[in-house]
Image 1: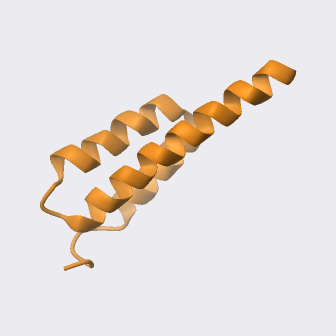
Image 2: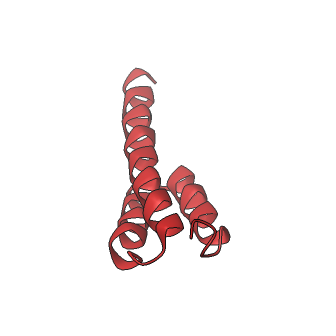
Length: 66
């Protein structure tokens, strides 16, 4: 079932990604690999990893030009 799990856990991952992208990657990987039985966590774990990489790259680009 798609609604299985608590939505607060992925939201915490997105917030952590905005604070520090490397922590977001670890958090997303933990959701993706350790919570395989809950599709909600698996889906958002993958999205958190992608979002973390995006934030990391944007941060590098912004720091390059400041």
